[in-house]
Length: 217
Image (cartoon, rainbow, N blue to C red; front, side):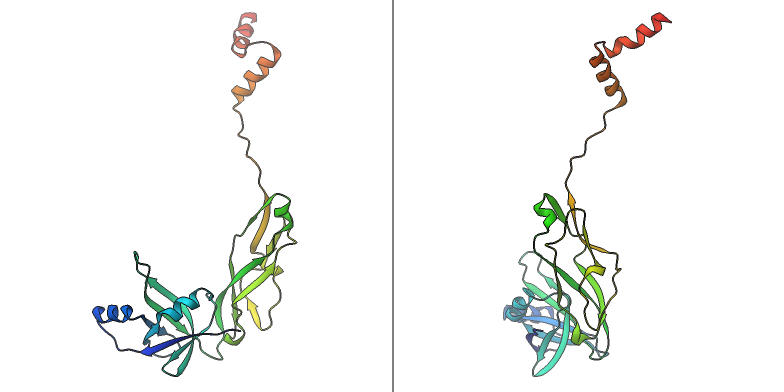
C-alpha cells in the first residue's frame, strides 16, 4: 500500500499575521489530534499536500515527517479561502497502532453495466461503506466490476469481495449501485376529460348528454 509522505515542522501557537506569512511561504498551519496526546501544532509543505490530495481518500493513511519523526495520520479536514481557494488550515487524526479503527472506504465502480448498454441508467445511492480493522490492513478503496449488472439488478454491500481481517459495518442489504430503465410518466387524465373523449368518439357532444337525459325523464 502506497504511503504519501508530507514534510512538516513544529510550530508554536502564532498570531494571525504570522500564520499568513507562513502561508505566503508555501507552508500551511496544521494540527494533529488523537493518539492520546495533546494536539500537535505543525506547518506542512503546501505543494506536497496539494499533490497528495489528488490521490488520497478518507481512508488513506499518510505519513507526516515532522523533522524526522514519523506520524501516521488521516486527513480529518481542511479549510480553503472562500475566494482564492488556497489552503488555510489542515486537521489530521493520528492513527494508533494496534488499536482497531472505524473508517469509511470509498467504492470505485469499474466497467459499463450490461443494463446501461441496453438502455438503462446506472444509479449510485452510496459511494462508500464503513469498516472496522487494524490500521495496517485498512483498504484505501474497494474496486468492483459492475459490467455484468443488468437492468433492475443491484449491487449490495453483501456482494462486495471479502477482505481479510476487515469487518464491514454497513448493512449487508444496502444498495451501492442499481441499473434502472428510464420511462416517461403518463399524466392521468381527469374523469371529465375521459367522458368527453368517450362521447366524442360515440358521435354525440359530451355537454348534450346530461340535458337529453333530463328531458327524457
